[in-house]
Amino acid sequence: MEKCLDQALRDLYDKKVDPRREPDPALYGGFLRTYNHAVDQSIDKKQQRTLARQFKNNNEVFSAFRAHRMSRDMAAQMVDKEGNLKSFDRFRKDVEPIADHHVRQWLRTEYDMALSRAHLASEWETYEADRDIMPNLRWVESTAITPDVVHSSFWGMVRPVDDAFWTAHHPGDHWGCQCSLEQTDDPVTPLSDEVIRKAPSPSPGLEENPGKTRRLFSDRSPYFPGSCETCPFRHLLKEPRTEKDCYNCPAAIEAFKQAYAKDTEVIFEYNGHTLEVHADVDRENSDYKNVVDVCKTFVRQGKSCVMTPKLNGDMNINPKHDAVYHTLKGTAFSTKCPDIRLGEYWYEHEGYDQENKGKSPDNKRPYSEMMGRGLKQSNRIIIEDCGMDISWMKDNIRTRIYKEGQDIEEVWLHLGEGQLLLLWKRRGDDHQ
Image (cartoon, rainbow, N blue to C red; front, side, top):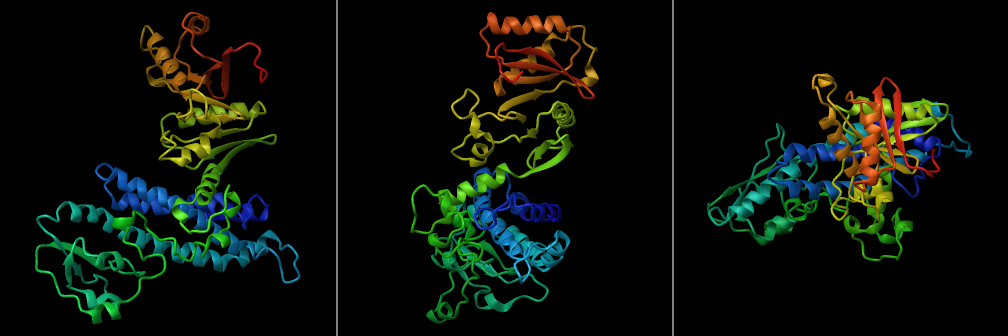
């Protein structure tokens, strides 16, 4: 998160981000990955895939507002009392208390609470599934060394799983709460009007039962606007809204999409051209180093590159795909995830196990597999050298185009160590 903070300060100081109207991409990405990590640690991604996806979808909106609030607070420190722009070093020093509050203190607290609330939601599915044999829930006392007594009146209380009480009150509705629930068939505990009257109100942002809403934090959190009229993202609306519903608001969704698309890191620069890597690119992937080498070669040729992540291509459930790959709409590759954006064009890289190079007497199969996989993602592809004769590969490409009718714009051969060979380029293409 510290790296994200450093980038955000530069973004603000260099005026790459408007703190009044948009979330900082670096902060957005740092917050989102933190909350999503809590979800991954608390929920079985295989058995509860839908639940995990719902939480992560809502985390995207929450992170957008969270990032906006922090960047707005930091931007206010950029000028002195006379209205003069501070030096970057002084600006960085003056925002240190804000960074300490937002990142080093509250983010840890929010992460711990996200863990607890995501775990509650995971268990809630079990509670509802098993309520025919164990219809009730018991509020279990806090496990903290010095427990907060805010929920002490509820300790040991037993209520039905489907009781409305659990909508208004539940473990994790106060910061630092370490209470829990256990399912039981023990008799229900009477709930007096006096207990309800004296019940503590949940902390702002923790009012909702995450097992029911599929949200870690409510839109009544201090990070969210009080109304649609005060929303920093309202300029992104095509039509004005008056009823606040931040998690389902098109403006909030568009804001996080814009932030997500810009969440990249420059890892190489040459003569003013850059190689950016999106934060969600898998850097542990076996092909990562080869793709980086390919992109660096293009950058040295005077072409800026962005390496992009693999995402679920169903834009109805994954608006992040639309954020990164929206220019593919209306094409045969609208749901695909090519590896590289080079200007306005998309390229797919296909790897080959270099350790097996030359061990097979016939490398036609790996070549065909790379071509086949690549052309499903883009009509501009880059393949790794598998030891095939250059002339044979060129003839094969012509056969694919003129006899089989395959759509191929470009084919590059990556020879390694900054070497790229153009095997095919459609005639008349103006980006020669």
